[in-house]
Length: 564
Picture 1 (cartoon, one colour):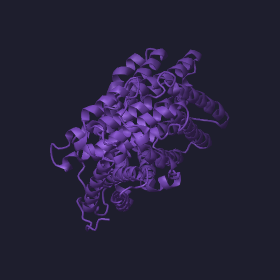
Picture 2: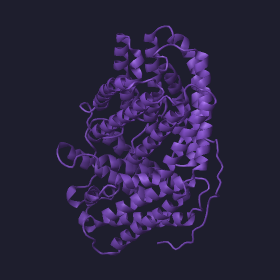
Picture 3: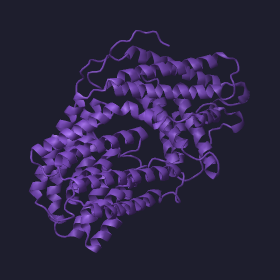
C-alpha cells in the first residue's frame, strides 16, 4: 500500500461551470430502439382508448407503456427479468399513489408522499442500475397520479389498465430477440473494443495523464461488457457465443493494460465485424492455451453484493431527493400552482452522483423545459383540432424525446415538456397560456429549490469511499504482484488477479470522480489516488506481458498472435 501522505487537490467549495453543459454529443448507437419501442408501446393503448372515447384513462396505460424505455442495453434473458421488475415497480408506485389520493386530498400530504416515493425510486434505481431513464419516469407517473381525484373502488380497474399496458411493453421490449438474439452482447463487446482502440491509438502522443480520461472510459466500457456477458447463460446454445465474445473483451482489457503493444485497427476491425449478424471474429487464441476464461469463471463464482449494502452509500442521494422534492412541492403550493407535482418531478430529475453533475442537470432541465414550453405554444393549436391529432402529436414528441435525449438531456426535454403538457389535456382541453405559465414557474422553482437541497445535504461519505477504493486497489495490485513473482502461478490465478486489479482501478477512478464533484467534503487523498493508479496500471501491463510470453503458447507463435 502506498505510504504517501494524503493531500488535497481540491478546495472544499468548487466552481459550478457552465462550460459544455449544453454541448451536443454524438447520438447513441441504438437511439432508435428506445424511440421506436416507446411509440410501439404507447400507441396501441392510446389509440384503443381514443376509439372507446376514454382517453381520460390514458395516464394509467402510459404507466405501463413507458416501461418499454428500459433495459435496451441488456441481453434478452436479463432484459426479460429487468422489464418484469420495472413493470412491477411502476405498478407498485402507482398503487401507493392511487391509494393515497383516494384517502386524502390534503396537498401537503400528497407532496410529502410523492417526495418519499421519489427518494425510494431513486435509491432502488441507482442501486440496481436500472436505467436509463432511471427513476424519473417512475416518479413522473406516481407523482402525477397523486393529484388525480380517485376512489378506492376505481383503483383495481386503473391498476389493471397499467398492468395490461405493462405486459404489452414487456412484449415490445423482447420483440427483437427472435431477429437478433445476440445483439445486446455484441454491441457491448464492440463498444469495449472501440474504447480500447481509442486509448491505444492515443497512447504515446503525450503524457500518460493526458490520456487518463480515455483509459477510464475504456475500462468502464470493458466493465459494462463483462456485466453484460456475465448475465448470459453458462450452458446451452448461447454459451458458445458468450465464450467467443469473452475472448474479445479480454483482448480489449489487454489493450488497455499494454497499449504500446496493441494494433488499434485490429480492435476496430473486430468491433466492426460484431455490428452485423455474421460470425464472431476469432482472436487467434485457442481454448487449450487460454487462461482468460478461468478468470471469467472466478467472476461467475463471486457472490453479488447484497442489495442492502448497495443501498447504504446511496443514503445521502436519497435524502437529497426526499428533501428537495418535498420543498419544491411545498414552494409550488405556496405560490398557488395547481400542479405541484411538476416542481416535484423537476427536483427528482436533478439528482446525480454528485453536486457538480446535479448542477449540470439543473441547467439542462431548465433550458430544455423552457424551450419545450415555447414548442408547446406552437403545437397546441394543431393538437386542439381533435383528440386524434392530440394523440398523434404526443406520439411524435415521444419519439423525438427518446431520439434526442442521448445527444444531451436538455434536447430531449424540449420534446418531453410539450408531451407532458398535452397528456394533461387527454381529459379535456385547457387554457394554453395557463399551462405554459404553471409549467415554467414550476420548472424554475423545482430546479432552484431542488439544487439548494442538494447543497444542504452533503455527502460526507464520499471521502471515506475514496479511501476504501484506494485500499482495495492497493490490495489487488499486491495480489497480482505476488503472483507475478512466482515462476509458475496456478492456472487462471494470474488472469483472475489481473481482472480483479482492473475492476479495482475502474472503481477507484469512478469513486474519485464522484467524490471530486461534491461540496463541503473533506480533502481527498489525491496523491494516494494518483500513486495507486500509476502503480496499478504498471502492474497490469507487466501481467499482460507475462501472459503474452508464456512458454505454453509455443515458440512458434507469431508476434501478431499475442497482440490484441
